[in-house]
Image (cartoon, rainbow, N blue to C red; front, side, top):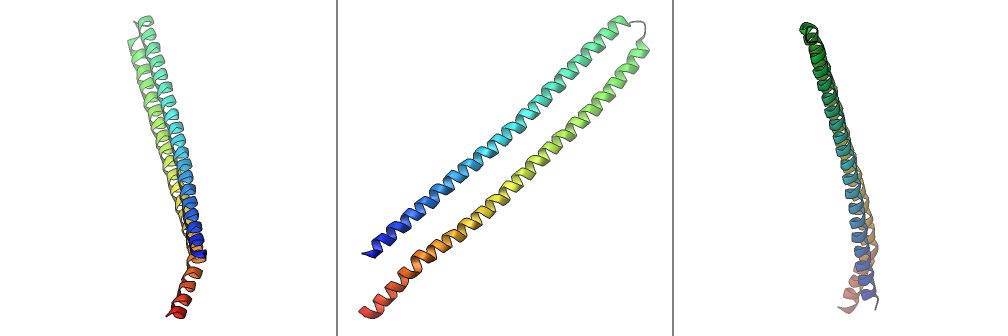
Length: 149
């Protein structure tokens, strides 16, 4: 009479554990996707801002060139300075992107560490549940085998 109840309880516990794992994994995946979307949005915003800056600088250069046709040497110096500034800005942007990539990698490492810790906890919990359910059940079988033989 007790064996079917134990088996049913074991099945229910396993199903519950599986359902909890599924929910946890879905939540973690959702968090990862949200973080990736945020990173992509930041990168897109930076690209848009950079494109707008470059366009403004080009417009400024064109206006200066038209207005100051006689002062080509000064314009060339200004253009060189602007190019240097652009190069500096691009370097800064590359550094920012690298930092964001490093942060993303650190977040992934932290998530993996958390997942490993959670998996270890779950395995410990499963072993405890298995020992609670199986060992008394096996002892009963051993006693029956000794008594009945």
